[in-house]
Amino acid sequence: MARRVFALGLLAAVLCGFWWLAVAPVIAAYQGNAKALAEARAVFARYQSVAAYETRLDDLTKQINAAPAKNQILPGGSDAIALAGLQSALQTIAGSNGAQILSAQALPPLDSGEFLMVGVRVDMVGDLAAIQRTLHKIESSVPFLFVVRANLRRREGAPESAAYEPIVLDTQLDIYGARTANSAGAAP
Image 1 (cartoon, rainbow, N blue to C red):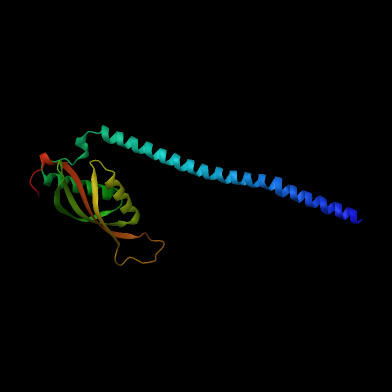
Image 2 (image 1 turned 90 degrees about the vertical axis):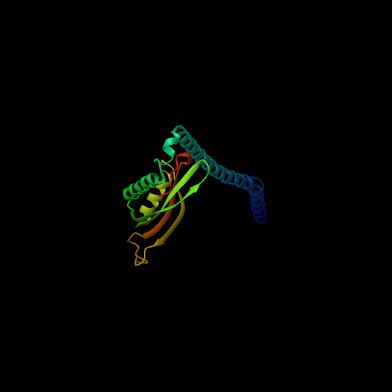
């Protein structure tokens, strides 16, 4: 009987030794490979998204380069006409995206050599989504417009913790558009 117990103990020891020396390292290697494979797949997915983004940027660059330069700058024979066109475009953009322009004020032009930048300061109000859509449309519009300063704040008197109501923002933006310096006229 003691021999049987000894033999069973020896068999158990040999099986445990075999497990720890042969089977466990193989399982650990497979688990390590699975983890490395998952990490490699995640990196590959990020590379694919970067490549897709690069392709999108290349397409946009080709589109911008193919567009006549005339469309990329504000039309108008004078600063006043260009500013009026800029204000009209901003009114249309804000209105179509759910924001409301309360006031607009001409800003001093900025000379950048080849181009003269004419600008306007607009005060607008809208919910967070409307302001976001408006800013996106302004920055992706043609002719090119540039938001050089933005001041956003929660509208006074708006409920602080009303989870079911949209956040209403008072927004002040300084927006510039370019026009060719050689066609620049007198400031408004």
